[in-house]
Image 1: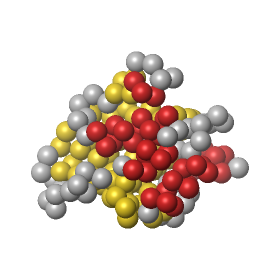
Image 2: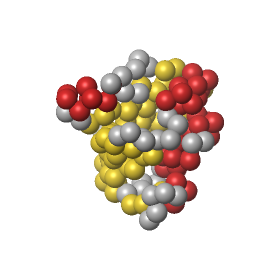
Image 3: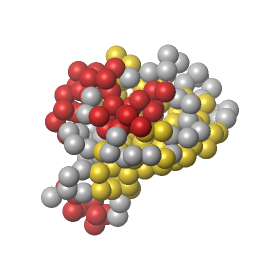
Image 4: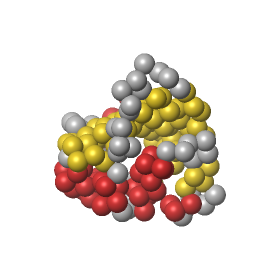
Length: 146
């Protein structure tokens, strides 16, 4: 299933400026732009990175399918979020798709938590699927839901 593995590391020169986000070793513009547009709060640009029938699986939610549903979710739930990717792995799949795994941190006005993202990019280099998983202890997760 895996044809190639590539290590990814990231740095941000100025984390307050979303346009300066860089992920060293990652040459996949779709994933980089996903983080840039989310950090900028430009959810219309974020959703354009998805395939028409793309799916997002956020924490504590069921799959959200289609661009309209995804952009509506982002407007409701992602305002003010800042995302700091640190490292990841690109996995080239046999079917022409790519799987990109990224770990980092997400911060809101009321909390910060370690996060992992899994992206499946289709053969057209669009996000077919992404899953956002919080990396926290059960107690930390319970505190987030309050």
